[in-house]
Image 1 (cartoon, rainbow, N blue to C red):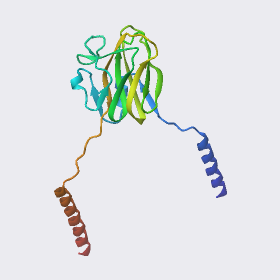
Image 2 (tube, one colour):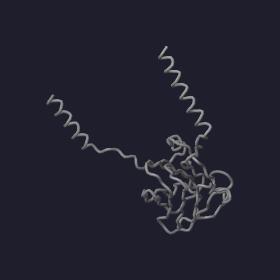
Image 3 (cartoon, rainbow, N blue to C red):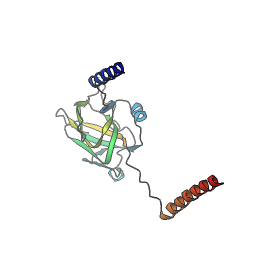
Image 4 (cartoon, rainbow, N blue to C red):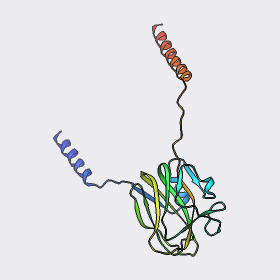
Length: 200
């Protein structure tokens, strides 16, 4: 018995010394991998019109562009200056965000969010002129907003498009009084029938 206690104590001490893994933030550069890794429904915003912007989003710009090199999906994308800050805010907690950047040609972009994640140079200038890139992340902490900011001072435009993010909670209606009464009655009948059979 004493030997078992010593082994258990040794195992406990060793397990305290082994660093524990904390997911924190998982980054993706491939949209298909990102979407298959997300374990909940995703909402999608194509940034084709300010009047069609999803109700659970707000953005700090209204610069929609039709330049084909800026657009990934649909007819338009947001046209953003590389030397300005761009912020997206969500009306609910979000745990996964993914989007396309197009034509990031001169300045790396930094990513920071409301959960405290900060990635300097998260989005790099592409090797090929006007190339598109995907940036996605899954967080174990809720995010309510994020900002992209330049690490340089170039005013060139880049396209922000095709954003997927964790969908908001779905409202589930409470059962009506009639439904509750029927469920209670059904439970009562089932209980009574079981008791009746037990007597017989």
